Image (tube, rainbow, N blue to C red; front, side, top):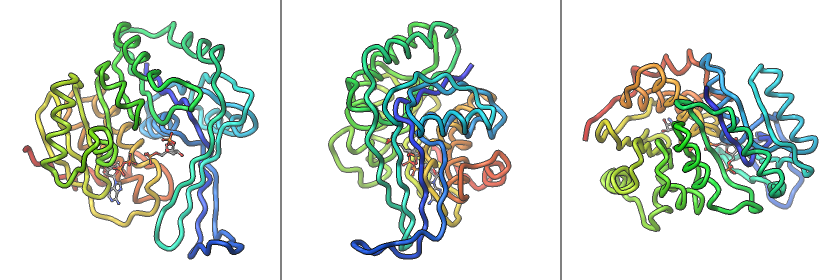
Length: 305
Ligand SMILES: Nc1ncnc2c1ncn2[C@@H]1O[C@H](COP(=O)(O)OP(=O)(O)O)[C@@H](O)[C@H]1O
Ligand SMILES: O=P(O)(O)OC[C@H]1O[C@](O)(COP(=O)(O)O)[C@@H](O)[C@@H]1O
């Protein structure tokens, strides 16, 4: 079974206009709303690949209901803890040829709600995959991911972590099986600059060796990704294309890795699929489909470093 965990889901409100003029009334040319947040997006992409998962986490208010209704309609299983406050709304603004984001304020998760959430793992079985993804609301300790990774590993689960900042910095010490920082998050993690592929390889190798993280996939947007892990070190080029909407590209890469890993048990195949899935999402209006990913797969070149 695959579980995805989103502590901080969101309605992604995607607004497009030719030009954004600050201080003036701007009217969108088109807009739409999607159920977002990193774990939820992983569940949505897995669903598009024909793989079932259960989305866990916290939702609240009318915005939370939008998310559960959305998933129910797509027949994606979910089992969220209900909060009193509203789930946030994240604005994704596409204007002047650029994408900007304003991510909203998170609802509070109190101790009671957190305890309730932990009971969702009572049925977890050895070999299950758990994806922990996205930011943590400020009401929670930044050590939450570290504690959950340690607890899940004891139960024999494969832990996949996609987060940034202090929660990532702490959780790497619990050795999750897979992490997918982008190159900015990697640089932030080591409080340094990442200037070239060599820097990425050096830092990712430290995560693999010193923290015993089996698979480190560093995504680099249109530059593709670098994999450092059990199956060596490789650079994967991204397919060429026009980026339309890159929100969710990272989440698609995570879903792509899991999907292919489950089938092949081969990290090179999985990393290739991850890159193709990320690019397929970047090249489309919303999250990728399996057909879109498979059309791009042969364009992902792998160079062993
Ligand atoms: N402009 C782009 N062109 C081609 N592929 C892209 C582009 N942006 C993202 N991708 C694909 O999506 C993956 C994840 O994107 P990235 O932006 O690095 O992640 P995140 O959204 O987590 O920051 C990349 O490894 C790449 O395969
Ligand atoms: O939890 P965070 O870090 O605020 O990120 C949430 C946002 O990230 C997304 O999951 C997209 O993530 P990626 O573009 O990294 O794949 C959005 O759906 C959501 O609005």
